[in-house]
Image 1 (cartoon, rainbow over the protein chains, first blue to last red):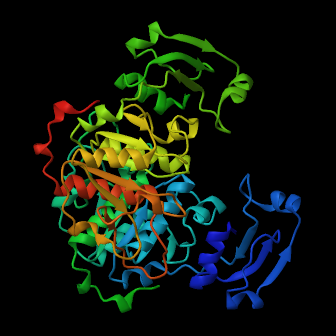
Image 2: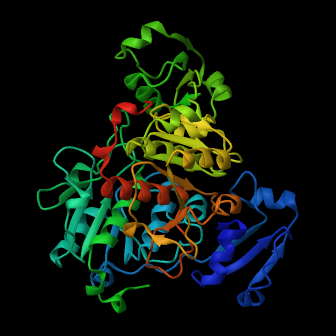
Image 3: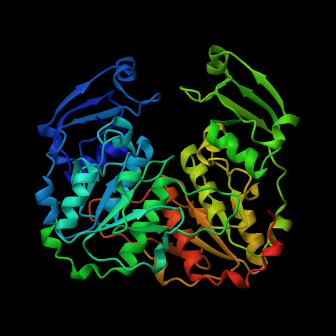
Length: 241
Length: 241
C-alpha cells in the first residue's frame, strides 16, 4: 500500500511496482500517466479514505501494489555491487529512508535480517518516497547470508560506533562490499561480530551527543563508499535492477 | 516535553536542559543521576501517562524542560563556526534528526526560518534523542539573517539538487559557512537564491530515485564539511555551547 500523491506519482512514473489498483478520493489527477488507463481505479468518499488509509491525515490517493519477487541469495552473489544489510532495524521511517538512500547511491540490493520491521509496511513504503522497488530486497537469516557472501569473496563491514572501529574516511572498500547496519538501540548483534569483519564508524566532534541516527549513519557510509570506490570497476550489467 | 527513557537519560546525563519536573509511571529507574534528587518527580498511573504522553505507546517517563534561551544574531556572528539554516523544514522527524546530526558534527548553531516546524514540538525533541540543547537554536527571519551573516563575511551554501549545483565533494568550504537546507517538497525558497550563494548537491547514481531525504542530505553535507575543512582553524572557544 503506497500512500500519498508524490509516492504514487513516483511509482507510476518510474514503472517500479506492479500497481493492482488505485484508490482515490477524487482530489488527485493522475491522467498524465499512460499506465493509469490500464489500472482499476476506485473513487471513495473522504470518510472511506480515512478508514482505508494508514496515515492520520490521508493525502487522497493510495496505490495497492504487488510485492515484488525477491531474488535468491545465489542471484545476489552474482551482482558484484554493494549490498546493504539491515540487522534488526526496527523503525519504519529509518527502514524507508535507508531503502531510498541505498537506491540513490546505486546499491545492488538490500538484505533484511530477522527482527527488522517489514519492508512493505505502509509507513516504510511512504518513507521510501516511491523508491521501494528501485533495488531488490531480500529477507533472509543475516548470519547465514553473510557467511555465504563471504564464501564468494564478499567483504563484510559493520557500522559500529563503539571501540575498535576504524574511521570510515580512512577505510578502503572493495566493490564486493556488504555494509551492515544494526538495531537503533543496540547496534550490531553480537552473533554477527567476528575478527574478519571490519568495524567502521563515522567520527563526530561533539561530546554531548551519544550517536547518529541509524539512517544518517548509513547515508554517510554510502556517500563515502560512492566517493572513494572505483565503481567503474563494477560491472553494472550484473546488477539485478 | 522530552519523552522516553533514552531521551530523558541523555538529558540528565549531559546536563543539557533545565529539567522542571519528571513524570513517570514508575517503570524507569533514574536514581543513578545525581540531579534527580533536586527535580520534582510525579508518579502517575499508566492511564494518566497515556493521556499526558505525545506518543501512542508511551515509554513510561517524561521530562518537562525549560526551553533554552536563544542567542541573538549578533552573538551568532561571533561564533566563527558552521551554522545550519533550515528553510521551511516541516517534518518533525527530519528537524530532530538534523539537530542531532548538526550537534554530532560540532556545528555552532542552527537557525530556523519561518514556515518550519516548532523545534520544541515533542516529536522533534524525541527525534533529537536528547540532543535538543546540544547547540544553540535561533528562530529568525532567514532572509534577513543570511544577509546579516554575509555582511560579516559568512558564506552561504544552498543544498539544492537542481541544475547549476556543484557536487559537494568538489566544493571548498570556509570555516564561516552557513549551510541552508530547504523544504522537503519544494527545496530552497526562491527568495533565498541569488548568484552570490553557491548551490551544492549530493550526486547519486540512480535514475529512478528522485531525491534524498532532507535530513540524509544535510547529514552527508555535514560529514563532507567535517572531512574537508580545517576545523582546527576555527576558534572553538568562541562557540556558544
